[in-house]
Image 1 (tube, rainbow, N blue to C red):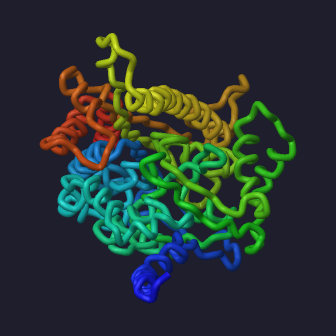
Image 2: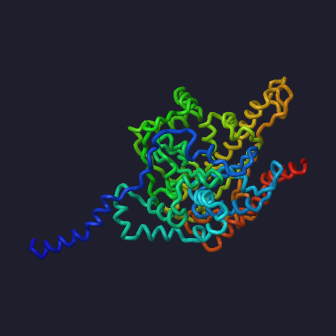
Image 3: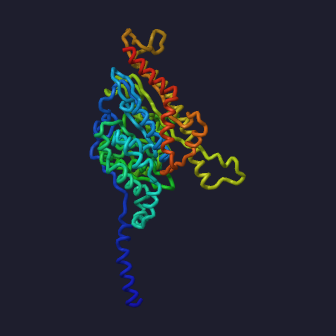
Amino acid sequence: MTPMQLEKCVRLLVLLAPLLTAVGCANYPINPPLERYEPNRGYRLLNLAPADNSRTLLVIMTFSGGGTRAAAFSYGVLEELAKTEVYWEGHDRRLLDEVDVISAVSGGSFTAAYYGLFGDSIFFEFEPHFLRKNVQRDLTLRFLNPVNWARLVSPYFGRSEIAAEYYDKHLFRGATFSDLLTTRGPAIIINATDMALGARFGFNQPQFDWICSDLSAFPVSRAVAASSASPILLSPVTLYNYAGRCHYRAPDHLKKAFEVRDWASREYHHAERQVSYLDQNKRRYVHLLDGGLADNLGLRAVLDEVVLAGGAVEILRRPEYSDLRRAVFVVVNAQAAPDSRWNRRKRIPSFRAMIAAASKVPLNRYNFETIALLRANAERWAKEVREARCGRDETGLPTSTTGQQGSVCHGLDFDIVEVSFDALSDEQEREYLKTLPTSFKLPRGAVDRLRAAARRILHESQDFQKLLGDMRSARSSN
């Protein structure tokens, strides 16, 4: 090598030094450890009761996945609930103000997290900041930016981390879960999928207790990035597992379910998944993908919470739920329809069409089964609560309004309101909305049509109108 060639090599190495350093040093953010488990501290439902909310009415909303389509549809439902006045316990108020919990996945998690952080500001800011922006283009430009190439080459840094940085800067303003805790709005449960288990992983402190990690300093943007980390397009979000360092102990009923090993029970399978986090040697890291892979409706978070607590009756023994008389579920389902155009073509469907069908068809069937499971559980929970509160009559059946000594008691009534494109009577509009892309970009006019559809579905919903009618009856009876 000549002196001139050597000089050129040295100059090249000098120029490449920052790049090589970035490749070696790029790493995803590390979730902080939990020094000591404290069951009454942190981002838990018991610490998240909205201000001035009724103790006898529980309203749970779930937002499905589906990219910006789902975000806009759930936003339209929030708009309508903000306009809906109800009467409960002697007071007139917006139905939106009675919402206690919002459980969301993927696209729906953007709307849920924004509302949880900023409240009614969502109605002025969310459209220009997210719904009407071409977020997909913005993310693509960041992935293609040479400044990020070196970071993406690192095996410890993925595309979802770049997406999280974008959401943090342009949408969530650096907020963490400690900020969500102090807003005194509804509890926001953002859901992802544990890649190893194929099961739901919720961003709340009870779930983080299993891995001895402190959720309070965790960025909301990174949780949303995990919840919307669509496979292939985006990378998993990775967490450290510190299990065994914070003196956490699994609940007794879950330990018992795990030890009994009743393969046919849902309690055993839930316990098996959760207990696996305690083996830090086998599970040093938790890799998270799109929440829709495990539950595209966000409903499993509610069902799992009941199992984790030991049953519906056990939940109602908690002081914050002891006076509960009515539970309302508003399930916002923005599922897309499979592409039916291939039914009219002779040629073999493309690889892209095959991938789309492989994701949409199982999700749609799974959504139906999840809602059916909720309805069946609601009937069982109502019976169990009525029996626990009111006892049984002389025939051995649960009583309805009086206890065994004739004292007045209250069971628990359930309302399930499904807000789905399938409820639209206009076939043309229904098909248009169901074929909108699952992406972070919508065609012109789609946001307004999604908002209008949410409003129309609620107005025409018999279940929703029955709920409002019951509340009006409560006003007249007083």
